[in-house]
Image (cartoon, rainbow, N blue to C red; front, side, top):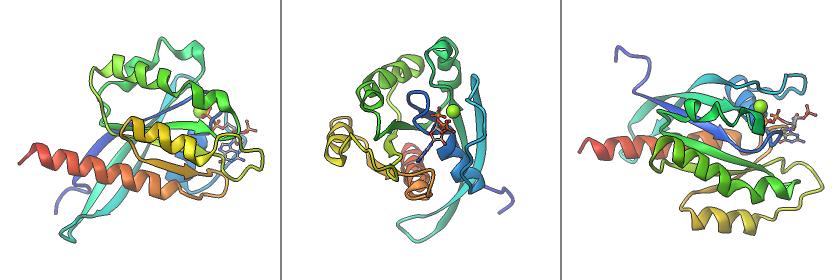
Length: 182
Ligand code: G3D
Ligand code: MG
């Protein structure tokens, strides 16, 4: 094949400030966790290829353009611009801060208003390495079920769950795209 990838998708990473959006994207795209990066200003994106094995056992390469959007309210006015054209996303909360879980609905609204349709999302419960967890898996799963999205847990610090999150999202996006072309 002449191209370096079979599919290209823009995905957005949403959630309150400090839930770990930048840490998740950095861990996935560069393979490390660092604590000295600056708070995301506005938005930035990373690019990474993911290999998917389809149900017929064929392989495809999916290029993900991952937009890490600033969660702080002062960036609210800018965010819709970054959401446009996205095919899917990650909705992230911090299991040690209940507030970040309670506001998930607002993030869904903001995204939906900006792009005018539903797109595949994965609910990501991050910071599972920390001992002071307050949001239980059952609560996360219930929210995810009620919105028809998968629920996955992660720690950007240890790397647990990170590759799986992007792999699952890429899989769903490829399936969706192929359905449209039948
Ligand atoms: P954001 O992009 O959603 O705003 P960041 O969040 O990725 O900037 O992360 C916010 C803080 O949480 C950072 O700490 C980061 O190191 C920490 N963090 C992110 N993910 C995890 C995780 O899975 N486990 C733990 N223990 N910490 C995490 P600092 O102290 O640098 O502000
Ligand atoms: Mg950030």
